[in-house]
Length: 250
Ligand SMILES: [Zn+2]
Image (cartoon, rainbow, N blue to C red; front, side, top):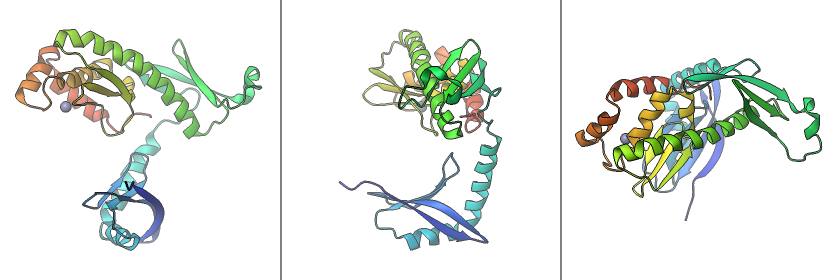
């Protein structure tokens, strides 16, 4: 079976050459332009779409493209730099980042393939890495948050499941940019590790929301009544959560 084919290309918009990723997706029907959270422009097109056609679509939407790229890049520039002293949110508190390069750590010198690690010491998150490049540090920090999420969010699922009279078959931790959680027809509840970077009551709201989907697979009044039974102020929590989307440091 065919899988998505991806290639890089540039398109001239106004006076600038804009790089973008051209993806041809099997069974896709319509062309879709987007700027992902990392600020990369993408064209997702039906399988038979040509590169020339992709450029044409981008030129037709030049206004939207430059406006959206500008907005996302501005937001990325506001992301805190991953350097010693930066504060990263952790539920209702925060951790102070302490970044150390590998050269400072003698005891790991003989360990091959060691790329680094993140560990918490009280209110400090110490990241030791062979590279201080943002991308490497991000990976190590994300790995740490994911582990924390697996523990904390699973415990919250354990806490709320009996109260709601439901039982997920599995809990998984994910990292999609666009959603905080999901619930599958097979009873798997998936939660985003980034919930560890929002206030605990907002993370709890997502846990309750997804658990309620085990009973109601829609957003019907019955569903919201079930959510409201445990989280009466769910509207406000949902609003606060939406306001945080796209504004987290990682
Ligand atoms: Zn939902």
